Image (cartoon, rainbow, N blue to C red; front, side, top):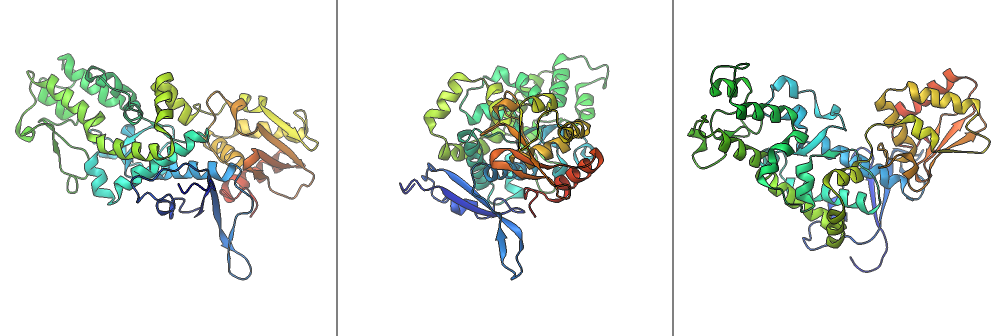
Length: 412
């Protein structure tokens, strides 16, 4: 913003990746634009012999930035400012939504929590949404993928796409299939499965019986919100149920998240020029925007192996390389994501698959020793793989590197 062209350098601890970021990005200035490159430096989290905390070695040529974007997104997704309707929605039984946000599946649909919840859980919720918008803006400009799948209604609103009121029920199916099923059932008028009357069905479905919606399980902290004036005393009937469903859809998908969208969009536009956002919405559908941001679903090991290069004496036919891919195929999905993150800085596969990995294809480099753990160079998407003596030793060392060294590239 000062015209120097020098990159913004953010130094953060690994256990608090957003520490000091708001002030560094000058988010206090509502007019500030962020139009210079971003570089990330991590504090290592451990000290040298004199007690001085160390900084991870290496220049940020993409790897630390990818890691920061990935970890920052995970922070927001795990916070109470966002929710997964499949787990957290107020119309579900409390027992089914209390599995713990820290363990929330990254591939689930994520939407902003209702505004009363945001106001209750975090005083600076508006700044947090703006910061998250900046993070997504950096991901777009740097062609990086992030570990979060936003609901299509949220993406439509953020990118300025209009939503017709007639499209709200179909949109809901992508966000919350359970609620979509319940509302479709209510509109059908046939209640043989859940009771004799509409009120019976509403009660069995954990939906409000009046024109007031419960937006949180914690009624002591977050009160019900009337869908219209006097709605808390207006009973839902056969005659007005269509109006009730329409108002409920608007509250969940549009009006209840309007301010969250506004601040998120403000952050996005601090980083991504408005003209570029318009170009994106002019040529891409919401599904394509989601794919651009989130990459492909799942990790296709065959595609990963096909688009891998080898250096320093390894080839696709090397014994250790064959053991490595056998070990990867035997891993559970979450550990494959850990390996991808360990090696590249991001746990997401690029849209289109591994051949679009930036800035280089995944590379396995031979290390001619047998007593070291695997290490990584995330800027170059390179894994240093020692020449282990057996598949069992390889699996043990690889598992240790993924589970114990965290994000420090295996160099601790």
